[in-house]
Image 1 (spheres, one colour):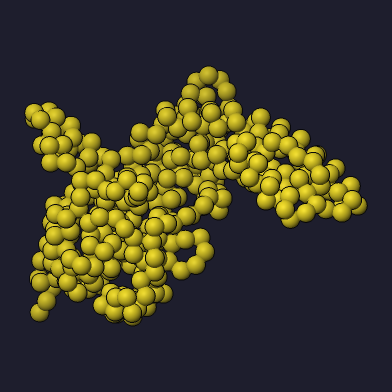
Image 2 (cartoon, rainbow, N blue to C red; image 1 turned 90 degrees about the vertical axis):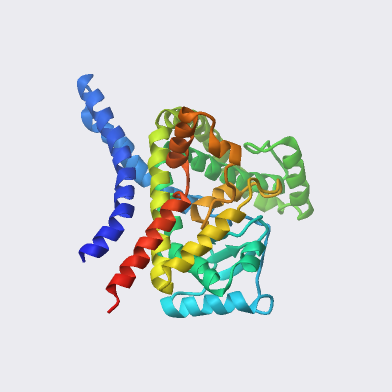
Length: 374
């Protein structure tokens, strides 16, 4: 039991640190309010909002695929990768994810769970071409570990905790936009119109043309619809006047508090990468195979990606490796101070632990497994 707690504590500790940063801001605000002679308990409101906001954003937000430039890998397209995935899912007794190919350069893989439909594991062509069967098994086991641990959900909650002051009013604006657009569609089909919130003139004209082709409501229906439509429009306009200043205030608050929050969230992301490495090594029983796969894949990661793939950076939190690596001259960093500063910045703001740290952890796990064998 102690060994299990010791292995899970780094991840749990990182998540508690995320909560601790939000709690520290609230306690600081409580102290300032008490010092000013105001009700100190009002300082607890931001912490409560961060919890509510993190959960609400999961329900309100759009959990879109990490990239749209993909296609499903059918069993006939690559029987080898399907056989490897079948074996791993049989060992873990988990639902089989959909395999998809995406066009990033270099060997890589990403796990993603959409709002609707089965989970997906995205792989690059270079991954399928460059890895042997055992290495491919280790990489897919790493991605299955992300799915089993629900890392996408945990990371999204942590980000919501640290960014609620911006995301919550932005989500409210998004809901307001959708509701206003629905009322506008009813208005157009009733023979009248207005400029929808946040739409450009071109967007409005294109939408209006499509709606008019579907025909107008009969006159009795128009009479019944127009009253509620215009009442809703007035109410939504008033709500927008409240939400827009709240959004601007949220942006200012986020800029003031974002640095510590971002650092602790990225620390959580790195801890979960190490946990996925450990789970993959334990599932396959071959930590050294995953270590060799990581070492060879790291050498093949490019300095930059094609310009047609702008969303790859957002995928890094659940990919087995970052999609780009620093240029060699950036890694050297000039003088001693420059190298130290770059190392500190990379350590604090990276989505992945240094590969050397991951390799050492896997070698240590392999040594423990050898020592435990009779």
